[in-house]
Image (tube, rainbow, N blue to C red; front, side):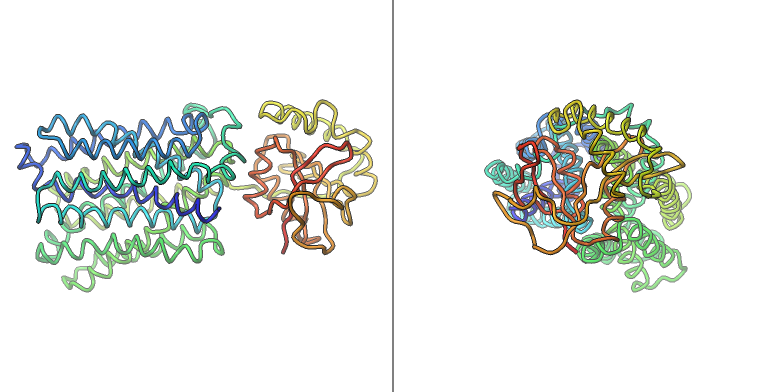
Length: 546
């Protein structure tokens, strides 16, 4: 079922890419048929971008209320309706009218699916997700070419609209597939909101870095051919082919980089991508009018760009916590559209005044800004390094406060019964300390979290229903893990610590504890079945093996 869901998500992202290159491919004919200046495409694309910015900012609220699956299917239908509307438009004002649902649909699906994949899947799948967006952008120009050579531009929009309707129907018919993933986390917290998200430490630097990256990517996409013609002296025909190398590089790069992302991690991949991108820019700046140099430059720029966008998105839950990622990714999408909407025209203006030779330096400015801001974000916001030690008797009162806070958070998020008002029992906490199986996580001299690691067989785990344990080898069990809410990464730090002691780890949680279920699955735990704790109530059992 997980594989089927991934295929559906990839299909949805193809639908996001399909319209992105369609207007540009058909506009040379469209503006003549509609009797408007060629520059009017700028008005149309800016209106679409405005819609995507608004819907991106609203995405977190919509997703928490309706779920990713509903937002996705409605968004694809919106873009399908908009594209069909384009196909029947005989006046420019009609394009303007249908650009509104186009923008709203594109922004919602972009933010919602990026957040869903960042929460539930690894970097590899985020990279491949954006690879499939590239597939959509490659398909549309060929559809438009077919339409222009056989009928007219409106047929190109009609064909893509029908493809969109078909994709929307497939998503609608398979809504049940989303349940296993979506129910573990979505709709458990109140929307963060734009103002609150912007006040979170690190968000401003992240947004500036992401805008800078999208400015560089958007400029390379839009002006590659013009730069080659105006500065490198390459013919328009050859320039069109060479300019497409950027798209080939970025799509292929996202596919192949997916195979190494999980091993290296988001941050290292971003740094490597930036290095490759910078080499490509330097090749463009070389005063050599040889096609092969320009060829290599744009391929490297595409390859370097390939992993940066998906890795920045995928690292958002890591840097800011899964409870904030929906709102922050929505703002990231909005900043992306600001960068791709306004920075390429700025290059066009500067190029007309100073000369198009400035492209490498223009790109390099944004690349340096991007990597600087992203590195600052990682340093300030990444999961901190905790000191973990055994709990001491003098820590007891602090632990009681932490568990009190944990009970409050559980109740606020639909889980009032797991710990109720008095669990874990004081006697159990005291026993953990006495037996030396209680540990505290310390950051900046303050206890931020607590957990117990119990080695040996747990009596409650002898019987498991609706499944089975992954193995029967010796194991350790994580119990009573809680945080004071002041630092993220408690579970990750505790798990790393426990796996240094014993690789085979088991844990259980309440069916209403959606947040913990999400955190466990995100960290590689497999759901094994149902066990019953001492009071006879059921718990979902998880295990992680070496």
